[in-house]
Amino acid sequence: MRLEAEQRDLLARTRIGMLALGAARLPLVNPAAFHFGGEALWITTSRHAAKLRLVRRDRRAAFLVMPEHDGRGVLLQGLLETYDPRSLRSQVRAMLQGPGFALNLGGYVLKNAPFVAGYLIDLARIPPEWWPHNRVLLRMRPDRVRLVPALEPPPATAATVPGAPSDVAVAVAREASAQLCWLSEGRPLLAEVAWATDGRGALFWLPHPAGVTPGAPAALVVERRHSFRATRVRGVCLRGRLEEAGQGRPRLAHRYQGRLPEGGTVLRLRVDRASWWRGFEVRTVRLAEVG
Image (cartoon, rainbow, N blue to C red; front, side, top):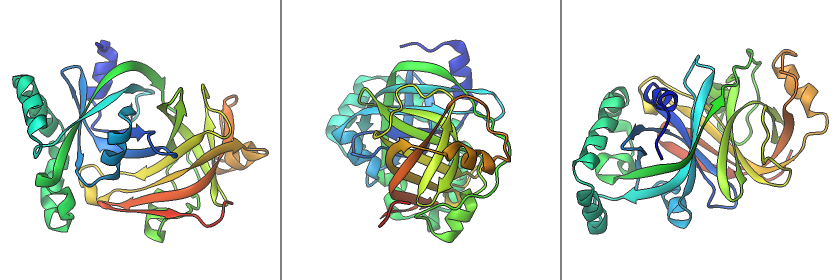
């Protein structure tokens, strides 16, 4: 499908988005540099990445792009395709697409030149699984696209993040917004939310809770980014199931100094496991108890 001019402009002005997959019992959300060209979204990842295994089970995905200081973002949904340079079938499929395939690869490199430079600076510190010869290409042709409002929350006090080492937890503790992923009609959806922790769970405020119901699997991602060095990125993905928040709204509003917007819905994420990343180092821990 063809995107509107405003949607294209927002995609062109942003280098990082959030990729959501829902193939597992619990959704998985990861940040990803991207390029949009040829009416498709282009992403690279390691052939050893967990997301690649999930794509092979279920190709349905969502991608959320939220430019800073813009007031709106773009949510895309569609099916992912994989192109592995080591696969003869992938090579043939790429050749059949003509010069557009190579042009979009070039577009990805040009758009993300700062990250490519940072990648080269830190190459000695990057695990071999993420070196160029172990990269594969993901392409998503969106079948649903819509503009979404940005959250623009007020400054927040620090939150205690379960399941992450202290340096990662401290890095993301003051991030005022997070991204929530949930499944609707079997397809992942993403939205920007206000958030706080609640024991070993997490509270969040969602302005437009379409299709979000207690008991549904969900994931909440909080990330501290770096302008061009991926090794400096710190993030946490809390995964579990949604439940009623009870008195969660006052506790959540307290983190934002009582300035949480009216309306919307406050729910709680009962966290089952936490995935955290420190650059290219990624770990997943299962929480022994739920707060």
